Amino acid sequence: MQSPDKLALVTGGTKGIGLAFSRRLTRMGFRVVATFRSDEESANQALQEIDKGLSVVRSDVSDPEDVAHLAELVRTEHGTPQVLVNNAGLNIDRPVLEISDTDWRRVLDTNLSGPFYMTRAFAPHMREAGGGSIVNIGATTAIRPRLNGANYCSSKAGLLHLTKCLAMELAPSIRVNCLIPGMIDTEEMRTRYRVAEPEYMNALLDEIPQRRIGSPDEMADALEFLVGERAAYITGQKLIVDGGQFMW
Image (cartoon, rainbow, N blue to C red; front, side):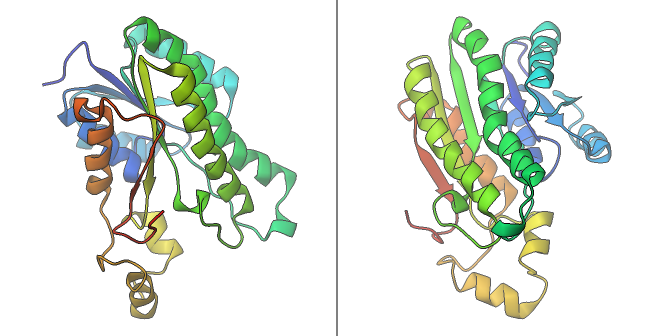
């Protein structure tokens, strides 16, 4: 049963890993506000799947004015969140010399500025209400770069350091950590890495000691830990859920 006193906000929380986060948080007793930017069909499907405790709101985290409007709407209609999950992300791959100004800004504005805008908007009220937990969703490419992703890799590398800065400044009442997925079974991952083709799937599994792809529910397991009391002494850290693929 959802508690009227427990509220969580998940950006990009209506599909993929974000939907798994929203689903898990409702099962933990939170009322969840999940944002989406443009995919209204996924938002409606999320509402059908999670029929109790979920509200969806259209919002663009890359726009500070839109984030300010979201913060006011959430506080007015739902209250102050104890948990903020900065999950919304954007990936526009190009060779570095072909990345346009627009593609650079869109990715940085969503993946790096977005969590900053969201934290700036919600953290003061979270602190006044007694604190809480913020989880930024990072990427392994924040540490090991890849081809054709200079904008994405840079944004996620910045997010790692932003996490540490926020953890220092918002302590002791608000904990801030970075949760990093490895190869997790989402539609984007299946398409990007062509896992339906045995040759590509086997090459991918050769890099993962556990020899399997992770599930969105396993990401939700890690989120449940980070926002729970068992992680009360953990802040400013990164948690990589990847079956051992990246041992950093």
